Length: 208
Image 1 (cartoon, rainbow, N blue to C red):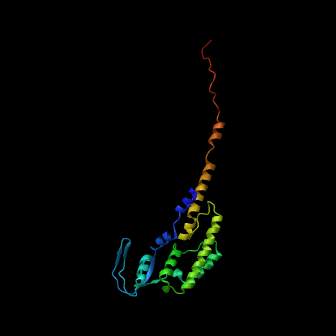
Image 2 (image 1 turned 90 degrees about the vertical axis):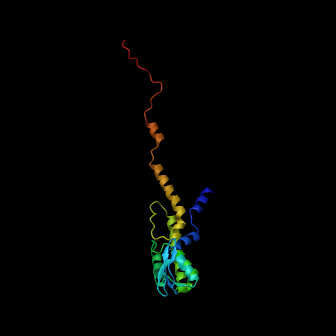
Image 3 (image 1 turned 180 degrees about the vertical axis):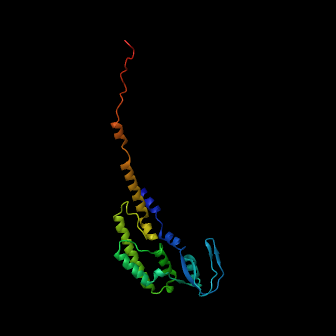
């Protein structure tokens, strides 16, 4: 079906969203001295042992794989912060502020730097609970979707991706419906206009 293919084309895959998340900055602690690294996207370094530096997540993972650094988890990934966010998510209809790529960042760190994350299993469990609560909110909002409910704030990349196709097509339908209601009915207007007979009698203007 054409509609189904359009829906699939408008969505990013989880791998594509994760690729975009890799440009987010994280903090590393090098364990050796390195000169600056020069890339098209920017220059990073020089690096010194035990002195923290900010680099893109993809570079942090590459250095971590080579045993050249540890990665410091961002502050929002602490158990205290996540527990507070989870409580607020459960008590509110609104989405709590989290990094746009919080799911992708945490997944990459779980895969490549789990030993650098204090209470890693608790952190992962809290993030999974937060994800489930927020995804439930997305489903609930979609069930109540109207043209006036498109100002959802603090949604993450994965959550936006879920509603992208549906919301876009729904708004197009609302826009089309409103325009059809506001457009004048040209057929009725023509019916109300006085009709001029085609064979109109001619008056004799000559004097008798």
